[in-house]
Amino acid sequence: MIDTTTPVQDQPVLNKTAFGEDFAWGVATAAYQIEGAHDTADKGPSIWDVFTSRKGKVKQNHNGNFACDFFNCYPGDLLLMQSMGIPDFRFSLSWSRLLPNGTGNVSRQGIGHYDRLVDNCLELGITPWVTLYHWDLPQSLEKKGGWANRDIVDWFAEYTALCGHAFGDRVKHWMVLNEPMVFTGAGYFLGVHAPGRRGFSSFIPAVHHAVLCQAEGGRILKSIDTSAEVGTTFSCSHIEPLRQREQDFQAARRVDALLNRLFLEPALGLGYPLDDLKFMRRIEKYIMPGDENKMPFDFDFIGIQNYTREIVRHSFWTPFLRANLVSAQKRGVPYTVMNWEVYPESIYHMLHHYSQYSDIKKLVVTENGAAFADELVDGEVNDQRRLDFLQRYLQQVLRAKQEGVKVDGYFVWSFLDNFEWAEGYTPRFGLVHVDYETQQRTVKNSGLWYRDFLNEKADSGGERG
Image 1 (cartoon, rainbow, N blue to C red):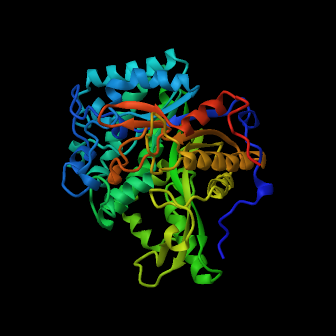
Image 2 (image 1 turned 120 degrees about the horizontal axis):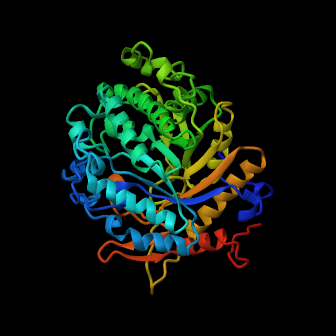
Image 3 (image 1 turned 90 degrees about the vertical axis):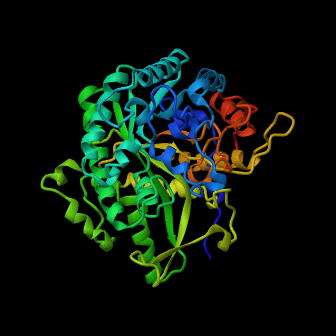
């Protein structure tokens, strides 16, 4: 039997003070998922603008054309954030809002928008944590091959330098890429995300070029401001074998290498985990002389984005990986609207897993949260399952920290309900409910709890036995 519970004795008492004074507390968002204003102020089309315009690519044919209208609503949203006592705000910049054609001509309106957003954050005492790339590649660059074209290293370098010079006098916390395994795998292999490409011919070069970009982006930001704190983020899931059988152990090792190590280890100077992913050996044809020295970068922090664990079994009929994931539904365990198992110890295991790499200076949980079927009733969203999720996962972050893991921050995904990629607007992850028709914001009970937790109120309900 697979254990699905956390032993009571391993659940530390949860309060903000226990994490230490220098622990960063925040919320996270992404440009395409909240901004809207898809064709406003010189913005060029991104791959997600184009992908969502194609019928059947997103559930109910939803798109991010308007989303939460954060482009226009950000002043009120930041005031709401301040009222909740949230000190750190992670958001991404839209590449095609700043460089409508991907390279070359700079949009002064785009620069002006993010200038105002950053300045407004600072005026309210909110620290901006900026992600350079959260999946919205300019469509003009996709027409030239996108991430599968090695020229993207130069394109990305130009974009990074622009952002660093424009905002680096005020932005001191940067993340280079968001979840490269997801945007290359889902976008260039499975075709379920933008730009909708499928197969190894796109995926393999996209992986290598993203690895080069994450390191090059870090070097450029540091060259502009040596005092800036520069990191990058990785999706990760705790992996376990279904059965105590060697074939399942080997299958789990391969899945772990693909999901959790493929992008991290090159950044640390360890190269690609090809011994465990033999089908990835074809990446060697894309590695040019000198690339081994360009792949690593000494990041100030690594962002981990964990939601769940995956249970793996050997599958002879699954090409390349010879492994299948066993769904939470089939295992009869609790799961979210995204069909992800609720398993708080996953984040504890991943913090320990990544802390074993000696070259990682520190870890920050740059995303964690859950989507449930929220309902707005009489002006209230009683999202007890999300509240419970956040408390239980935070207990596991604290548990890891108390055991010596250098984890120095936690960001809830997400501040607002938003456009959830191929799933459209159905899944709601936010601490704040958004009525997409009226753009009315309502802080959910989980958001009220987070507010009280951050402000150390005695009646916050933050302690659990």
